[in-house]
Image 1: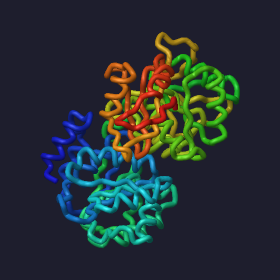
Image 2: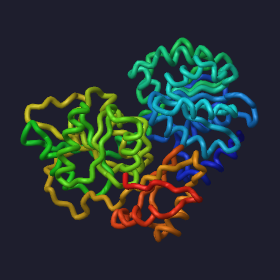
Image 3: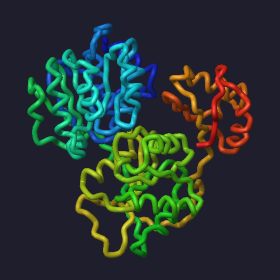
Image 4: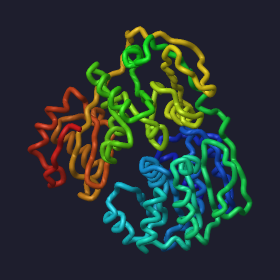
Length: 437
């Protein structure tokens, strides 16, 4: 693709008005060579590597031209959503565990130009002989440091050995790499370091909140009741703790969601949608939620438990102060608790449990059991809710469209009556089951 076309698509099809310095720098790299991009979470690196990736692709090539490997399903979906609107005239597919293998295989009936995948699922397709990556010229290993941490080194190596025609390789990492992996071409290696340039830490206030007891639940509740309205993630170190915190805050009447690896993929994806559309603006999460999630305008991060490493501290905090926004980091400490060396605070705060504009949910999420595969579009849903549900366009929030489902933010005060009203109606001559998520 021509760079002018890519930049026009960014301007017209995304919320990005102007590239940041890192994205501008990546737009200038050659489409040959091996590059390591060091950048913090939330700095816009997906768009940064998407520009040279798309520059390296030719329309109607008839074979897979680019592969992006990412360590989590959530990150795969996020990357694909960034690339698709920019890659006009090109086919982008996403492969990841928990997704229907049958549907992924069907998507290969017309050869894609770009594949975004987790390492294991991509290797599975290769073993089945369903894709040929011999002509791939561009490879991106996104969050390579996280992939190594999660034990994907062998799978990535086995996939990369099939990529015999590489010309452009980009690795992204939040932390410096000891060395390039030996299974990648080392032609003209270059490190592009934006790890300290306008980092989110410069726009963060790190606040210490002391808990009078070892059990921090009361202090956490007091803090959440003291904050101004916005989206918040509370991080804990164990699934059991996340469940316990979630149950406690729910009984307290706070609008909370839950996110950890013990939930199935649908429940995890639904939790992120409900956070993003403000149905549950407080999310309780393990470190699984520290990377690979596209969550706009997160106002605060709360560390209920201390992060176990400097990397965990960095990536948790990277959920806020994203894309030049500001954000607050709260660290809840108990008497006698060791504070790791990598945590420094700017000030102390004693929660008042009073807020002039408290965290609240004005939105509910409607669930439709029809989606893209039933030929339903976002426009169809908007028209249906206006014509049959009596909503105005301004009352319709974020619409998330999946293969066989759609999730829509609507005013909480009207949600239950909408479900009753719409139960009798058809959308595009299709009877859809509509419920509150």
